[in-house]
Image (tube, rainbow, N blue to C red; front, side, top):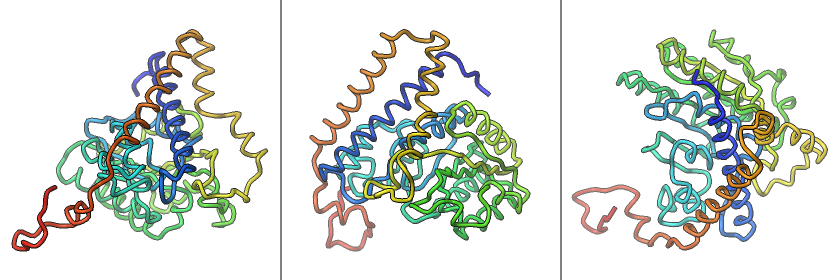
Length: 332
């Protein structure tokens, strides 16, 4: 695995801080009704992404996830201004304002969504991995889903085929404890979701996903296995979300005290503590990082607010194109 150096810790801190503040801004815009529909925030789960990106090869690896999907494409290289514009439904967004919060997509940077149907991305991720194997690209697909989606039948079908064909895919369940609002204990007679991999003789196990180092180590091993041609791995990232399932979630299923307890192991705080303990940065340098983060979030908001909404004709342009159908001109 690539060494975890001073530079890595500083990048982790700046990236995770930006992801957190970016989504805090989205929450404020949602309250102002500038972000419509649902809004599922990643606050608390940032170490899952930070650790994975350290282990990935972004020149050929890919990622697919569910609808808690705003910061992943940013980590993969998508311009955050375009992500925020998409959330505001603007024409400059990643899907020209047609996808919104739950359907961020950027093929150029290897990010394949953003899927609103629970568990839909699990077989699709296996399919992307099949294409990589077929075309011998050397790429590995990170396929993320939540603990609620782990109860879908499509998971078992995808696991079976992925093992049979030794597909280069890493299946990752981000277990934040509650799915939409129902605890893991109430959805099955077992609480160790990773053990579902045992039925397919798939390498599997739990990961402390509040710690990006643990995530990076587990992901490195899984990715290298897939790249060697030895097939998939199933990892259970044990994490926690500080906000509700979505912004409309009243969170009656948990206590404020529980959330406060998990804030004591906030992944951003853990990384910052290491930076301070090892004198990787002075207080002034940390403040400079925080200011850069704030400035970039403001820049994203300004870009999104000032961008135009899509023209009505775009509704027709993005559906299909038929050469011998002359009644609707296509411009895209």
